[in-house]
Amino acid sequence: MENFEDYKELPSKYEIDEYKMIKDFCLTVKDEKIQNILLIIIEGKGAFRRFKDAVIELNIDMDWYSYRDRRYKDLAIAWCQNNDIEYID
Image (cartoon, rainbow, N blue to C red):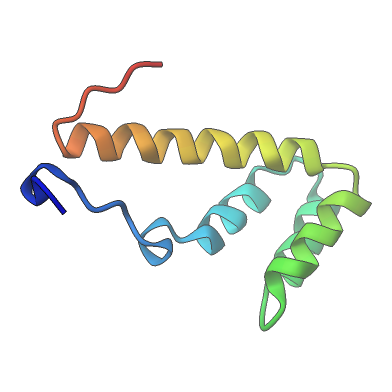
């Protein structure tokens, strides 16, 4: 690869920590009953699948996708700033 030193490594999925993103989203849900349901289902193996199914069933999937998109955008902006890369919205 030419000019290897010009490239910046993107964060790994572990650095992004989508589980924390999901848990943070659960804490933003105003309905305490729904929040508690979500916090319970994200525990243990299969948490991501159960979470995805639950947000659809609870009809808050669009809220989740909006939240997730904002978080990814914030991560991208922070990554650009930390790597002296101009971010244009």
